[in-house]
Image (cartoon, rainbow, N blue to C red; front, top):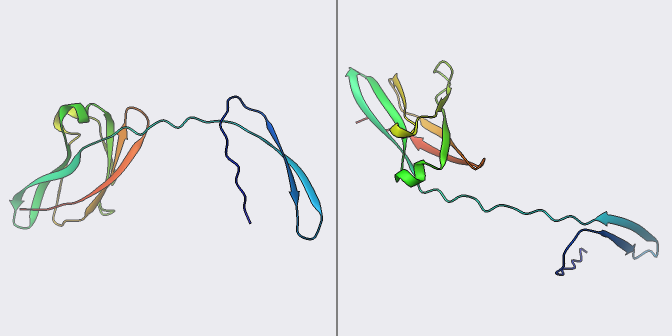
Length: 134
């Protein structure tokens, strides 16, 4: 059985714990209480989209990018796109905000692209996008 104790206060200190088991034996232990502040995650209202154009029968030039209001895009440092493993160097980084962190490539088939959006505050948002050719 787990028992919790909650309280309010300030400062850090050592908590002395006495554990009494059903069989009668007692264990004494200590725990250094420490407080950590967790920063609130930056809200991010963006989507991942793509464009495409057929360059020859069955072959496409395409681009994948982040779409959002300018204020939202300003929160982003870089975007990491992981392409299909058949691409050379499939992990690609886009750090140009004025084009929505655009990445362009050529290929013949669609696949789902894992997308890591790295924010300026150090947090990362994981998204994905399935390419559409039309």
